[in-house]
Length: 385
Ligand code: PMP
Ligand code: GLN
Image: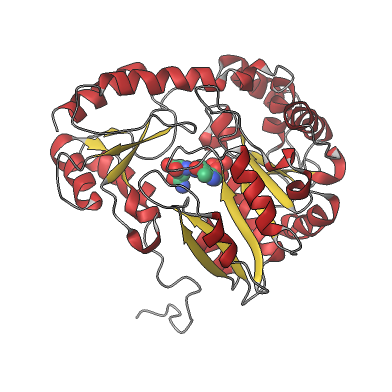
């Protein structure tokens, strides 16, 4: 007899399987090259692996302090100060988290009350809306315009009202590869002026910017920083997405509330990895070289696609590239992506799943955090489409 409990109301009744899980499963099923989900198919720096191994063997295997070990928070604080000119107190304004995902969820959970509105720019990475809804909030979706995803700041501003508790931005932007400009940040600042709105800035790709673009962290803008959580991911920066290590920075008053949720949700984060990262971060080259490293990969891919029928504008940041297939097919992007994996053994991500009302611009997203061999094999397939 089935005795499982069925009399409850799901908090997230409409939630589909994530597109990353779906495409990665299809990639396995069809023995396909997987350039869908964003993760490197190469190993982190052996120096970092050695530091982790050392930390594991030298007695750092019990609970870390709740917000993270001091030396890691201190070196993060120095890094932010050097790069963006903003001082965060390591002991009260920086928290080590289980990847950026936990930082994002915790910030939302600490501040969003049932009925509150949270403005999200679409297309958006998939974790924002479920986190808002699980806390009773209402996502207010503002679509970036056109195939090149410009932000209409006037429209954005029109969605901010007395019910708006928070807005979420992401730069460099997944999936578009767009990098917010100074002008964007000034516009955002104007939109939030004289409001009590909290800004959640997802900056997990902060070090992956190309062609001389600069990452515009909200921590560079005092009027924004004073109301913001800035979220970062060591998974992205050090080719170790499986470690789920990240951090966030925020002014004391905001972080104090964040920690009340963090303490009883995770309490503290993986201790030996924190130890290793604190040492590894002492060499800025380890993160400052990332833009050049990924720009080479982007260019390798785009050169190999030069004779294909895909249209593209080179990505300005992240390790994602959008490809427009409208000269190849009129299929929906989800059908195109499914055909690509089933018939051609190449997995990518259709963009409509990230858009408001699933707008379909006939674009797919490919991840170029892959070895040269994988990128060349993938582009051979794309060139026959
Ligand atoms: N934000 C964005 C935009 C991402 O692409 C990712 C990576 N999947 C995350 C947040 C989550 O980062 P993490 O793996 O550190 O939780
Ligand atoms: N951030 C990764 C991407 O955009 C996916 C992470 C996940 O699978 N949730 O592809």
